[in-house]
Length: 446
Ligand code: PEP
Ligand code: CO
Image: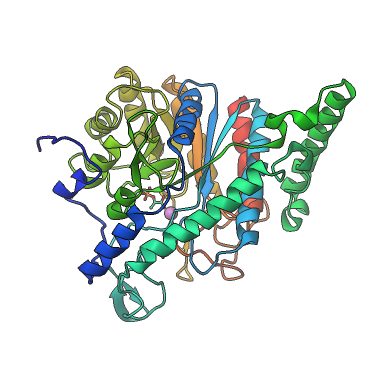
């Protein structure tokens, strides 16, 4: 297809997969119009800052930690849940920074991660066939036909929940909660009592001792913003293109277009066709962009994506997120790493060890085993090292809640039924997340 001049709406000329069937066209238009008039959620300058930090990860001087829910939920929305998720991510970042001595770029799957691609337009609930649940930005997960109808007013609801979430994230990360003097406070009770929690306490105690030492030397620790505040960025899958288009704004400083729904957007493994609408849309916004790369991706496809999304070869602009599965990564990833390196694309390579390792348990729950998750990360590090590529980050689904959605881990979760609350894919709980961070820090040090 001949490329036309890019506009925020030029994706409409291309095939857009995974878009809901909105039954009420007028209601959809009216919701999108309303969003077009709303304030941006993030600023272009912040997105540029994230690109600069990701450039460090592309060039081997930093590590990306991208983490959060598979799908945020309209139902499970509370200050406590947001705070607890932040605690876990901050703890992981501390373990990685302290353990590996590498700066960590912190990006949440948060404040906008609502829309879900589905492998089938319908799903069986019991023996009834219903339209698939597509995330709370589209429909309800309740198991009846009426709840599954795509409702455009949810687009506006998702915007407001994103705004409230982001407001709290900004308050927590800039208003004192992320202060390095508070490292102990992030260790939640159910984590602190575990082996990983105790290991974390040792690091926290060392950091406190280091801060006391700096104070004793006369360093004004209180006025040092880098010890008191954290740069924390938001991201989600740019799946619903009408929503993303409505929040896309021309930056007056640079004259460039930015999708102001989040700092970073990614395109999923199911929607990354080169001639498709999703790649068209993301090609024209200047935010840092991620692209999921699954086991069916060919060298030509990946090089095409690099060329299309980062023709100017800007370090930090593009993050390729490998999600091959533990059984396939050793075979699928190395040719892609080699081709991208030889073509000279300055991408961040990150590992999503979750989406290639999902299976249905005997009890009918979608789950993942911690050993498969860690196994894929280890093989990712090995493949990167063999190809002379910096292993630039991890992308994980987690929650601060004490859930039982992924099997295994040091505490050996065996029974998924105890606390399974995910709105979509199974997430690591706080202990499993911290365990993963310690192991990744060891891999980074090696
Ligand atoms: C996800 O990140 O939740 C997801 C659906 O990923 P993928 O596109 O890699 O399947
Ligand atoms: Co998921």
